[in-house]
Image (cartoon, rainbow, N blue to C red):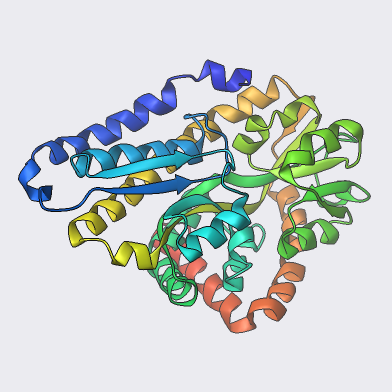
Amino acid sequence: MNLFVKRNRTIGLVSIFLILTSQFSMAKSNTENRFSKLPKIEMTFAHNATSDPRMHNQAAALAFKAYAEERSMGKIKVNISPGGALGDTSSLQDQTRMGSIEVSCSHTEGTMAMIFPKIQVISIPYLFESIDHALWVMDHYYGKKMFDEFKEKTGIRIIGVWDNGGFRNFTNNKRPVHTATDMAGLNIRTMEIPAHMAIVKALGASPTPIGWSELYTSLQTGVVDGQENSLPVIMAGNLYEVQKYLILDGHVYSQIHLFANEKWLSGLPEEYQTIILDAGKMAQTAGRLSTRILRHRGVDFLKSRMTEVYTPTAEQRKTFRDATQEPVMKLLHKKVGRETVEEFKAAVEQAAKDMGYRQ
């Protein structure tokens, strides 16, 4: 457990508890008779992230479990399997799709793209004004339409969404990065996501896909110069111990999707279906709250432990956007179609107007 987590031992759990309390009071008003004729069920909620309850995926899992078990008067038992005990995100996705796991999370757009390429549109760099802007798109018409299509094509229903720690940012050990040209020549670890790799290439750097479990050592030994991740992920992985420079460029928004096997869910009694869907909303609230807390406190934490944490000016950030946005959109035109990309951009622009970012 790193120092950041120790210093914030209670803040996430206390806040989540306060949110859940109001929901539990409603559950208590129901009598045992409502569920007396319904069978007991046991289910698994799996993810591949840390079991630390202050981190977003485990916080979401605990909120889901607490709500589902309390609301069902103990008729639903939720077994949480964290830390990749049942497999990596790709394996968990496959198992949820097949129904051997009922519910799982840790699924980013990178994993989902294997079975639903359209999700890659959220990787267009420097597109959103804020995390709330991105979540608005997913919470309203566009997201609901996309997730309905995802369910029809895969047999998986998305019952919750939260950001994966916010926007992704670049770190490295070679030099401070303030503008796009400063990235030239750096060797940057990425996930094996074409859009992410295209961003790094467009900046004149070399993308090197490396698994998460190998990342810390790869940075420590100089296999790669740097990497890109959100602040909570950088802290959770102690990457600040082996990286000197961080630029808060916020190039890509990444999010976590909470999966439920649709055949399993639709086969439950209606009362249980309602509970599971509401538990998904509680997990979503807990996940979003956890990442918000971590993002808020993360900048000061990293400033005290890295050589430089730099916030670019609007003009400097524009150099990154100008260098990367067009190449990534061209790539996505080939992978998912121009119409899909334009529809998503239009939804993002409409959300910006609805939220007051645009007139």
